Image 1 (cartoon, helix red, strand yellow):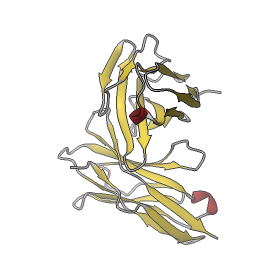
Image 2 (cartoon, chains in turn yellow, brown; image 1 turned 180 degrees about the vertical axis):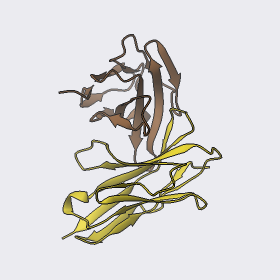
Image 3 (cartoon, chains in turn red, brown; image 1 turned 120 degrees about the vertical axis):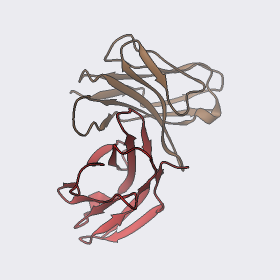
Length: 114
Length: 114
């Protein structure tokens, strides 16, 4: 079974609108971490936001927030007030327990339309 | 500038040749990783290292060799390149002891095997 599933290969959003990128995960560990990375067309991987499995509050970083629904095993990324510079690939990732292996999803390509 | 430096950024080689991708970090992070990125697969772990002289296989290690004689360097060698190893390769590092423990990535090395 896939550890991380991103079901949206591509998404479009109007500039200044909010957009949600879906991510579901699969683990039997109680302790794990969830991450979102952005990959612009230039290719680098940029860390956006982190959510720990024991964190009771949803993580927020500026215009990024993580909608963490533990029972549903989902960790959706919400980008508010989209900007043209948000156009990129977005990857969801998970690290189980105290391990060092990160599992990545296949990514969602986001295009912001002016 | 501090960070992770990968070289070469672009490489074209022929089937059967040996290729080494270099990775250098200036942060003294303990953990270093090599991932490959392929369309439809996201990022997959090839090898990782917890410290100098300690390396472990990841999800897709076949056909690759790593070494880590110094903390700051983590070269990846394709001993006899195959076309299936055409990919974008990312080196990453991780700082231990932090709450998030996110990966920090290099800019990637695009390898084409003809």
